[in-house]
Image (cartoon, rainbow, N blue to C red; front, side, top):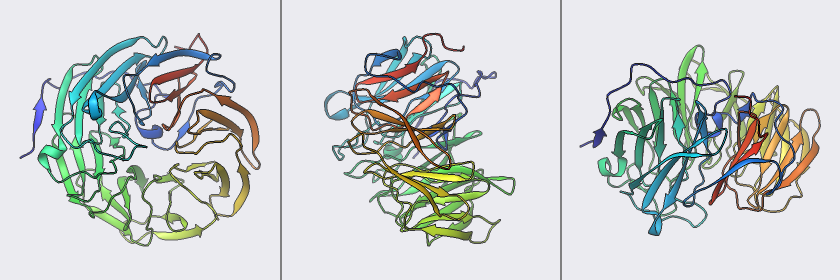
Length: 403
């Protein structure tokens, strides 16, 4: 039986969400409309504020209504799961909430239970943890509802650690749990925490986060796993089309632009979806190599970062390589890049952010060390760059934010 704890009546009036807010993993596609962002900083210089976190986490922060939300772990063996809220201007902690883990906390030492990125609509924050715990708080930290997915589906989980982030569209949260146990994708009512629909997925370990795309005026949610891509209607979960040839994409998430879906696979692949038929394969490239880092498509070019720090820019229409640049900042690359104001912000695990001016060619503008281990993807909002490590949340920008 589904276990949903509903604590608060739905509010009739929402809260404002500004255009530069970051509401989910990578802001959906890793592109920000922010301009005049900082390009030079260090662990001591250029910070607006730094906030300490209680424990590890790989989730990127999400931002709405002047508030920054981030998840973390706490207690022995990550048995406590934490959601924190900070003021975007000052870094003041507004609230912190914790719940006990209900699922296994066993995982690879590179990841942890706060790997999935939370979501916000400005009114509430929705946080999924790798244990299968899903919790919703309002903007003031009051519990709205809580759900143990492993309580509902006891075989969910894997010993490596689940990490796919949810997506949100309209009134529905989309979660994909693919593992050695019961695997499924589910559309959950964001107001109540109850299932709107649920579809079976292959029992294969997978970490790709879903995305929502517009296909001929209709919203679809895409799930990619080792057996290919499947598109589902956002309202009913009905399968619309599949791309079974796009296989072995288990880390980097999909992206899209101008009606085309781009996916990591045995070969990086560009697809044009149809209404119900299998999508047209536009091109494939063995040179656009992707590791953990999700790609970005912008103004006719696609940017991918490999785990060793090799950045490739390809033509989004043909897949032909435009330029290749090997970063010399040291360290491995796990965080997905951010594109803002014609620049790529690329963070490595050693905490160095390399900033590239991109276009027909690349120019390194700066290399900024923060002297901290960072695996979470950077985001931009309120004239600042936000980075999170296991121990801290950094806001890099002017002391006089624009709002």
